[in-house]
Structures are given as structure tokens and as C-alpha cells.
Image (cartoon, rainbow, N blue to C red):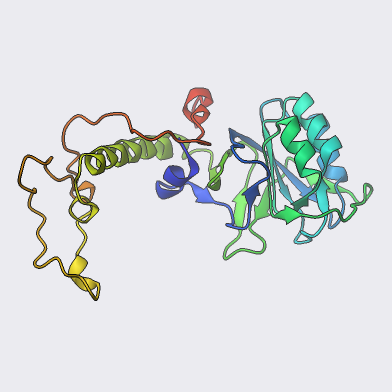
Length: 251
């Protein structure tokens, strides 16, 4: 269950400026919020020592992104103590070593600018991410964080069951559409699109009627037509997070 589907069904996306430090990095875990003082990562070190195993550190760097808040030492320490992953709206460094360590880390960039270790901060309190984005994103302890190659989303506690149920239904519809595409169906028909709105369209009059010569009947998820029984997608979903439904126990 990946971030694209979750965001489409109510998950709250982090800023598009965040990226996975190494390809294929992914996790699903409850949030342990961290607020660093600008240019300082003392609070991150304290969080690594205190966060419950299996949780994810979600780090607000107070708008001062151009520092290397997470390095090899901190990543190895976090991995050793059972942290599931780190998301921060600041930069990281030692990216090759972090990838070798295997800790999923999502940040805003790479910088070898040194941080301090004595300016305080806070852990376990509500934070606000997306400081440089279009809208702040509040993150509270116990919210669910899902991250993969497509981005990072927050599932607010109390809404997780609803979002997961809607996402599973959406994934089923998408797989049915992909099966139909692989069988030769047109995406114009499947999605109910009007190609005549595009200059240069030469297909003549467009119809949503099923195509002749034995092709599968159309699916139209916008009308609730899920057609057939559905089959597993022929595509693999690298970087997707299947663990969110496996480990979540309730709102």
C-alpha cells in the first residue's frame, strides 16, 4: 500500500521537496515528533535514545534546512535502537553510508554543513512540517507515517482505518484498469475521457461503448463499475509499503 494511493484517499502529503536518500527506502510507522533548534541536532540524538522501537522520527528543523542534521553516526544509532525511519525537512549527509546502513531516511537535500549539539529543541510534542511548502502539516505523536520512493504521507490517528479501507478499494479499481489496459482496452474509454478536447485529435467521434472484436468491456471507476472479479496487477510495486495494514492495530 503505497503513498500515492494513500494520499489519494485522505492521507496528508508532506512537501514534494522531500526525497528518499536511497532508492527503495520505505517504511510505515507511528510518528515520534522532534523539533530541532535551527542548525542543531541535539534533540535528534535525544530522540534516538528515547523513541519507542518501531517508531519513525519526524523532524522539524525550524526552517533552517541547509545543515546536515542526519549523518552516518546518527543513522547507525537509530537503526541499532530500532527506529523505523527518519523524515526531516532539512538536509542530510553521508548518504552512501546511510544507504549502506539500511535506515530509510527522507530529507530535503544533501549538505555537509556542520550542526551544533547544544541548542535544545523538543521531542514528543506536536510539530508542523512543510514549513517551506504551500501549507503547514501538523504531525502528532501516534500519527501514522508512510514513506516510499513516491513521497511521504501522514495518516492522522483516528482516521487510519477509514483511509486504509478507502485505499484498498482504490487499489482494487486501479488493478482492474491495468488488467484491462494490458488486454488492449483504451485508457480513454476506461477513464471516461473526451479526446475531442485536444487539438489534433483525429479519431473521429468518440464513444464509451465497448469496443468490438471481443475486447473486454469497459470499466469506469468514476461510475462505480468495477467490472469482473479483478486480478493481481501484472506490475510489481517497488518501494510500496505493505506493512501499514499488517502492523496497524486500530485508531
